[in-house]
Amino acid sequence: MLTYEREYQFAKDYPEIFWGEQADKLDWFQKPQTILSVDEHQIERWFSDGVMNTAWMALDYHCQQGRGEQTALIYDSPATGVQKQWNYQALRDDVARVAGMLAAQGVTKGDRVVLYMPMIPEAVMAMLACARLGAIHSVVFGGFAPNELAVRIEDAEPKVLITASCGIEVNKVIPYKPLVDKAIMDSRWKPEQVIIVQRPVHTAELNQARDQDWQRLFEEAKPHECVPVRATDPLYILYTSGTTGKPKGVVRDNGGHAVAMKYSMSAIYNMPQDGVFWAASDVGWVVGHSYIVYGPLIHGCATILYEGKPVRTPDPGAFWRVCQQYQVDILFSAPTAFRAIKKEDPHGEWIHRDSLQSLQAIFMAGERLDPPTLEWVQSHTDKPVIDHWWQTETGWAIAGNPLGIETMPIKPGSSTKATPGYVVEILNEQGEPQQCGQQGYVALKRPLPPGCLPTIWRNHDRFESGYLSQFPGYYVSGDGGYVDEQGYLFIMGRIDDVINVAGHRLSTGEMEEVVGAHPAVAECAVIGVHDALKGQLPLGLVVLKNGMKVDTHQLELELVGQVRDHIGAIACFHHAVVVERLPKTRSGKILRRVIRQIADGESYTVPSTIDDPLSLSELEQALHHDIDHKTG
Ligand code: COA
Ligand code: AMP
Image 1 (tube, rainbow, N blue to C red):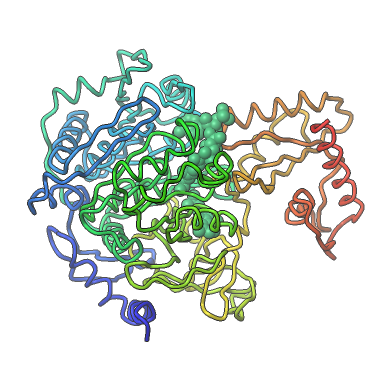
Image 2: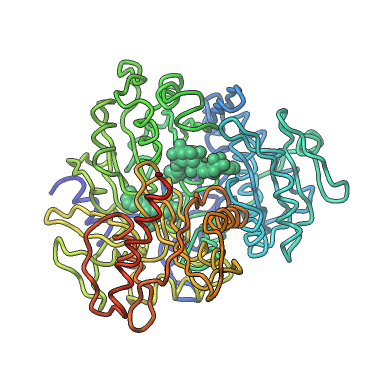
């Protein structure tokens, strides 16, 4: 049997032995004796009697082992021109002081702290400081609008909110403080304190009664020790888009997460302990949590925090410059980032292969790695380019090409095979396994491995109804796909109302709520249409209220503005088209799949359940008319 097959089979047949051995590789305060058990909701939990601290494993342990001088954090910010590094000792000391600073504000074990931060070192320190105290952090991506932040504040009920005076996007400074103020004003829950990192490029005005200056508090703070927590205590909550307007608070526990991070760094990424790992993502996304902060540090690597874009900061050579400058071993980003590079540097003239000597492989996730992008990156870098599939809910790759176990041949369009610990099955509507090559629901057999979510924050019913109840014994991923005769997994896209824009997961249902609230709109549908750069872009189709006379261009501007104000610029909602009616089934369900096929110019079959087939040709006409109109 090949190495991968052996490891996969062993993890499947003897999960407790397999994960018990992985847990032994970490430094626990109290080693777990119980490897797998079930909680009061009958959900499988890992290492329930283990006692530990994630920040200890990520920082103090390495210092104790004499690796304090080794580089831990590299901050590279083309946005500001700053480049700075921390070794393990220095990062540990700073994090201990930030923990002391939070403790002085009354933050203790189990309290929530919301972070609305740009990609600055203080964001990483704040996350680790929460972990040190056993407090639960919830990072909100800086591209989200105040309303999104407010919804998360209300759900997480943080004692403290940490932010910065601004974020820096390409050629623009985005003041964060007014966004935070609005979010707190709109939220029913008010954090007791707001701590602000003042950045030189823009200073925020502080509200004397509530706001505190990070630097002042930091200077006054005393270092705080690591607080022991149970393996099953939450490390963080990360909100992700579901099918409704209310995002889901994915809960990550401490112990399972640490074990999964450690295992993945070796098994999936084949990272040496003294290597340099670069996840070119954002701490606001799960990739940032797992592979900018926790995975590399728990493994003892150097991690790069890059405050910039793949292009325009300042050029499409940025990724290759960083790889060369810091001798990066593994680069991880989303396919959209490479499509952006390819667009600006189609012949790969910024890529100098000689200077990419240290680079072992390029990993991609966040959306399907489309074969043309795979081919372009592979041929221009001459490196293995690995697609791996995962979700906020799992926190690490469900399927991939595990370089640390065995490098399997790459098949374009496939994320290779299930990672040891996961059992992936393709099910039909009735929950029966599909044959090879047949598409269906991609489901994961329970128990999910360590690191995956045990619940949704304060809404366990949503976890049950959204993921577990459809097929008993399985977790439903929300993705559709198939497995071929050689066991390769092909993820074909979401089967729910979630879309993927530039590797960012967004809810069309949420956009529909915003669009539908416009006084002229009777009904609407938002669908994801194909985009050559960002993979998908949202498109709004709106039906006007009877007798409503509006300037459609003006209406589009208003809808675009409302989605931007409500959800954020990151939604990339730029397009709305007025239609006579929406194609529906006889029972009133909007035929989204067909609408998407029409918008993408694909061939489609008219569903037998359609209420009125004429609605499809009307839609085609409206879309063509709109394109003609916009392209003149
Ligand atoms: N704070 C505030 N605004 C932000 C933001 C942040 N952290 N991140 C993005 N935005 C804004 C952008 O400025 C832009 O605003 P605009 O409409 O006023 O121009 C909007 O949100 C859309 O941003 P984005 O989708 O990132 O588009 P872009 O044109 O700036 O960049 C890419 C395109 C492809 C270069 C970029 O999306 C990218 O690097 N993607 C990589 C994806 C990634 O890291 N995914 C994480 C999973 S691995
Ligand atoms: P997120 O929770 O933001 O990480 O988004 C998870 C979703 O992104 C998945 O459910 C998929 O729809 C999509 N996704 C992530 N990685 C891949 C991949 N490698 N191939 C296909 N789809 C992916």
